Image (tube, rainbow, N blue to C red; front, side):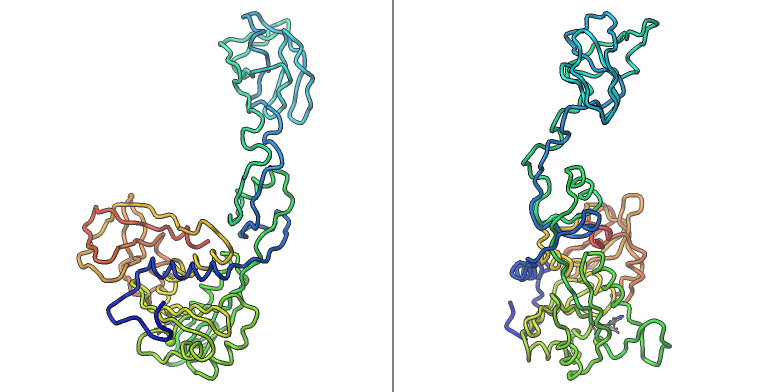
Length: 408
Ligand code: AMP
Ligand code: MG
């Protein structure tokens, strides 16, 4: 880490990976360990606290994958077979009488003694009600074996898995009515800036509407956090001290604004007085200035205030930090390699995350990439990553991070 309170040497920017590694290290050291037990229907967006081991074989018994006839392959000589029982899903069958077949429906247990199911399309019911089979029959065919999905004791979902509809469905298939999940991480959101007012109020001279507050609050909710909306913080040291002091019982204070070079950084001063502060100059664009520190023991992340910078630094640094504090193992967003549909003639010294979208399989970018233009991200489907020192001509391969990957 940089010496407390000292920005990095001018010109020496911290690579995104380094910043992320430091944040994750700090997140690991302050992982939220408390847990709660919730009904399965309420675990959406939460993080599994313990490994989920299967308590049963799934399926519990061999069952039919088709509507058709269950029989023993050895019994079939080419002659039609008598139907000795009918088995619907939900029934417990009798063992199959030798030399007969059983009418069976999808999901019904295969009777003991049968070793295959022939689908009804390949069977013909004769006038005497016996069934003739048209094709060669193979043992095991159309049977879903016991335990094909999972067997007793198998690890089905590891602790640290984020739970969504698929995981909920899987847990339900194993009979789980409740799951232990990590308690929600509580995040206080502060927007700093004398120029900010809330939507709904009339705009005065020099004022702008606060867009970061609602953007971050709703994003944090999607990530499964408890959000404490701490409102707007004026650019004033006394108020900063007081308002920070009021934020008790939170796991993180997340602020935006007030970290630009040359600005009176009241958040920074307050952290230096009553905690600790690192100011990072990151090799990221939009972005660059980022504050990490503590206020009276509570971790604080200060993001740059320009909305596109807030978005990118939240997506790439704060989101993984928060997920890691919840114990999530898989925090890396999917990146796809795509050909770019634009030229990038001038190499930058910061890694750029251009707001772009895919058109005919190529990444194109919004016409205005200013860090103040949030519309670029509303237009975009993803972030096009252009590495430091890199130029591009149309057709070159670039990484594309779908926004859908990081918005949850
Ligand atoms: P700062 O990081 O405070 O220097 O802010 C950089 C730019 O972002 C300035 O143009 C601010 O007006 C703008 N800004 C800061 N916070 C917000 C916010 N919450 N909503 C919208 N714009 C903001
Ligand atoms: Mg400001």
